[in-house]
Image 1 (cartoon, rainbow, N blue to C red):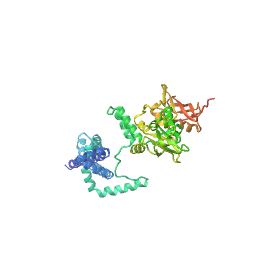
Image 2: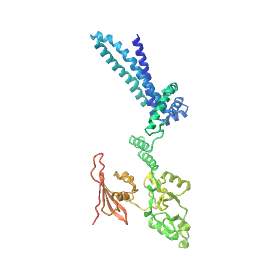
Image 3: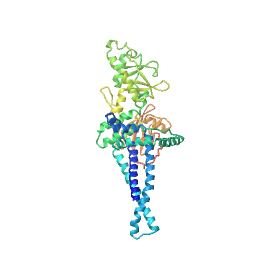
Image 4: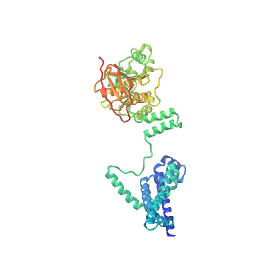
Length: 447
């Protein structure tokens, strides 16, 4: 009779182990946002979950304490009880003496372990993972009560564990981050598109929106060397001529040099000048004030500034106060939705596919744009463009015919615009085995 009572106690303790295991897994996998939303809607169980999550580290410590205690006691009670209950059947089949003891306790250990794993570990764990919020709502009140009762022991162990963690150079935290990172959200969007839960267009827009937070003004600006600018003394007629030649509608206006940009003139201001006065009115008179921003400004903040001030263009200035380039509102929007061409844009071929595995690229493309459009991974570095990467690898200004070999691809300088690389031929070569990181440079200067 005593053995059966001990066995019943072991079953009850195994159920308690399962309770603590379910609490541990449900509280660590539950979506905090969903729990908070349900709590705001009046769900008392969800409110208890949110309260528990605010002291998550303590709750998990209590769960671990409960798991350890119940598991030890189950082993202490179940194995001897099962061993005694098995002695009779084993003696009935002909075993005797030491053999009965060894076999009975061996079988008892196997049965107790199986019971503990199935009912105390695997079952509760799988249930908690399958329905985190539902499970957490059931176990959270009990866990909070157990934490309160065993608070002294839990807090003592928690302080000791925190001291060890600090000695290792880390700062303990009571709660998990409830927000997801940009990379994780982008991965969720891609996976949702693949599974048909989100349209590819919406997924791409979401992914680009998340990428926008990681980019700076220098990533999308038109560099200084490619700006169409006008002196402050240029006439309204000069503004119209520049607009006709370039296809641009806005022009930075400068004084003595390009580092003294005083404003931005829009072609419509020149059009509004009577024809008879266009040779007398200057670009400086027609220009509007310009917003100057540091090159380190994040695009997200720059977009806010342009919207707040009702502007379409900003001047990008480097850390020494020199003009670095300009960013337009259209440049930022194109980072979200792709290339936009309006009636004032001139065709600009930044990429042309020659055939399978071969492209002609603008040297002004960023490494991430090359990867996005061709699948060729150009390493990130201290440069901002494909031309900058070539110069970094060659350790000099590139010349026509110079070749840089990547893992599985080759980049060749096709044409220069002065000293600037204007066109690069990219072609797939061999695909190196996974893990290969060879990146060698072979400069072949044309005769």
